[in-house]
Length: 287
Image (tube, rainbow, N blue to C red):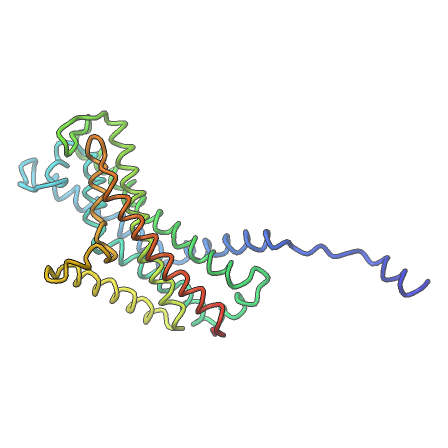
């Protein structure tokens, strides 16, 4: 038998396709994010927010004197969802996103596993995409954790019924639930700009705590700038300028202008910092 025919008789080894590598990478990233105890502690803290608010309002009675969404919780438990999301947006949700995004690449680097991931068949670009998708899913999971907890506590502790909108009109409970669901989606998307910043910062260091601190510090600086009236000319370009636009979904009809501007702003932040993270991870040897 000739050498050529012997080689031809050797069965070909099927190599996993790039698509299978990509799917495995995405699955691995989700397992990494949601397999950590830290993630579940963060989600538990977020779930506790509606519980604390609901119990506090219930114990204080219906005449608590609160304004805004909090003032309507005692009359309709559906508003506990909106109030909890609104109160979590300035601090609790950004903190959770800061922790997870800051650890995304820096955590791998500190454990020494990033180099192996960078040389995997899926490639660096797909690795970064998998990290970003995992962060996006965490943003959704975080907001919907509050949504579900607020729904349960609100329906258990308070009466529910037709929803009085900010414009003065009334909608059914079912439509109110759909609008509350849309509010959670808008808030989750509003966190994507911060997630992009965290991903980029995480690509710059091998110390997760440093990445978390730098990301949260950036968030604080942007918040301080947004509170200075003398520089209001730059306020529309700051990360959290349109975060409160979710309330426009509780008007009849909903006001979409501010919501769309906010989502476009978040998309801009995400694009800039994702591209910066991509340039970093594809051009340098990260260990």
